[in-house]
Length: 449
Image 1 (tube, helix red, strand yellow):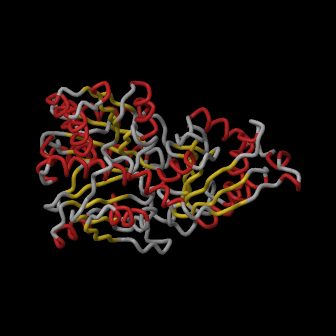
Image 2 (tube, one colour; image 1 turned 60 degrees about the vertical axis):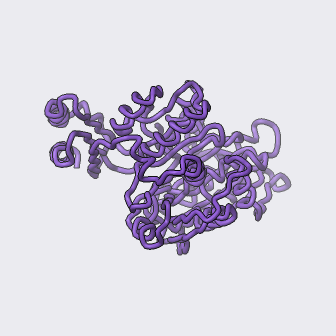
Image 3 (cartoon, one colour; image 1 turned 90 degrees about the horizontal axis):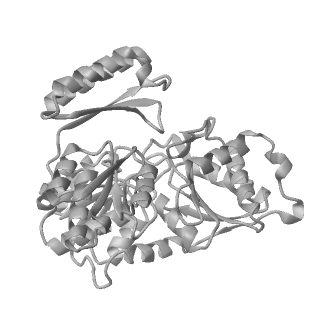
C-alpha cells in the first residue's frame, strides 16, 4: 500500500491530514484527470454516509472534479454498495464514496469505484496517489469554458431498491415476517426500512435518526446488544444490523443470540449447493474465518479458498477462482451473481430467502456450524514495523501455538485502517483463548505500544 491509500481507500480523522478539504479537492481532480485522458467529459457520482464531515468532503470533491472539466453527480446519503451500483446503473465513469465504515464519526474516508462498480486495484490507487502527491495538479486544471457542472440525483435510492429486489425470485415477499433493523444511524437509515416495508415485512427499525455524530455509536453491526433486546421484546424472527456505510451485516436470531458472518456464509452456501447453484462448489473466506467454518464446509463437501483479510482480496480470489459467494467473519459478504461488492442489505435478503425456504428459525439454521471460541484483542501501536523483526513477539506467538497443539490457531496482523495490531486466538475453550491472546497482546504492547 502507498502513503495515502490503505486497504479500504483513504481514511483518517476528519479535518486532519489526509482527510482534509484540500486533499479531497486533489482526489477529485486526480480521478477526473485520469478519466479525462480517455478523451471525453467524465461523469462521476458522489455518495456519503451520515457523518458531519461528509458535507465538507462532498463539496471539496465536487470542486476538484468540476475544476478538471468533469461533471459531478451528487447522490447524498447512500450505502457504499449503493454507490457501486448507481455508478454502473447511471453509466457514470467512476463513483466516489465518503465514509469510514464502522469507525467513529470523527473519522472519515474516501473510496473510489470503477465504471463497472468494482473497487480500484492496488496499482490504480498507486497511480492516483503519485498524481495527488506530485503537487502539480494546478497546472492541469480546465480552462474557464471547459469547467464541469454539478447536479443532484434524486432517484438514486429508488433505483437501488429495485436492484436489491431483483436479487430475489419475483414471487418472493416477506409478508408478516417480523424483522428488526438496526441502521447504525448510518447510510442505510432511509433505504433499509423502506425496502423491507415495500416487501411487506413487519418492520421495527432502530437507530434511524442520524445527527452527524451518532453513526455507529453503541449501535449497528459493531454493537448488536440493543438489537438483540429489541428482537426479544418484539418477538421478531430475526434482527439485522448494518454498519455505518451499509456494506456489512450482523444477524441476531430469534433468541437474541448474535450469529457470526461465518455462520451466515455457511447457511447461504449450503442452500446454494442444495439448489445446484454453488458455482465450482466453492466458498471464498479469509484467514480470519473461524475454524468451525472449515469443519462445517468439509462435512458439506464444499471447497474453501482463503484470501488475505479485506473484502477487496476476497473479491480478487472470487474472480480468480470463479466463485459466486465469499466473505469475511465480520459480516462483509459478496454475492457475485448480484453485486460487485459486499452489501449488507443484499446479504440480509439472501439470508431471508433461505429462512423462507427452509421454514426453520434462525437459531436452527445457525447450527450448521459450531463456532470455535475466538478472541480478538486490539493493541494500539505507534508504528507498524514487520512483526518478524521482534523476536520477543515471535516467541510469544510460538509459545501460544505450542500450547494449542493443533486444537486452535493464532493470527497476528496490523489493521489496514487504524494504528492497531490485532491478535486473534482460536482454541478449545474461551478461557484458554483469552489467556493466550492477552499474553501475546502484552508482549506487543511492551514492544510497539
